[in-house]
Image 1 (tube, rainbow, N blue to C red):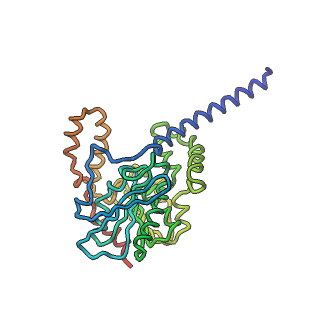
Image 2: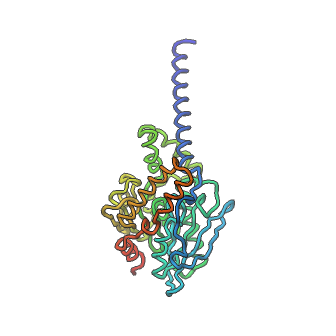
Length: 334
């Protein structure tokens, strides 16, 4: 073998090894983020309709090989208004993590439809598949709401992953208004930012082409589109809500900073992190419990039960009335 051939073989081998390494790393990152189910944590308490004296009508929307399940929530003690809130949850335990927010709208007289996305809590599916799957959930919820409540206008509200989902869905279905809270803008940047602290920033950038291919295979051309690209196709009035101390959705990937337009209003919440609809104290408690869940891996069962039994879920989900009032005023004012 001559020198030129040897160099060619070495270079091709190095390129092949690099491609294999980055593919494997990208596959692992995608698997960790989207290849699992997100069910409610057995250590934690979750507020339900009964805690707020709400009626909860079971909903199941067939999606072929699985179903999206959830509820339509109503406060039956007050007159029902002909505007339906479709609430789309973020990553985690499905919509049960947002019962306080759902109850807020229901107690104003609006029916609230909340479905768990694929692979989350009440819904079927082996995993959540990818970020765009949340858009499919939002679309399915809007379609169902229009079917069972045809006289009602539809108002989309979503947090985090759900915020991205409702922004994108607003370009796919006719709705009256949209509120996106702590919404990320780009699926690729979201995974990159999550992976960077673990695998390094350089490697996080290097796996982006593979992640893009994965999204295209799973969802087609729209799998890599940003919320800003979808919103550019819509003239629906939108309110973007963000906390100025959000360390989960960083500024470079926050819809709040990436999206502008005549139909866009913004609400920046001072001293708030990723859950700006909560009080500062509630956000602190949520951060503490999140940290405690990591420590729980080293506890025995008795220690876990004792520790988490003392967790005050109502205090940790206390809403910031001023923020919620501003969201409601935007949604329901004519």
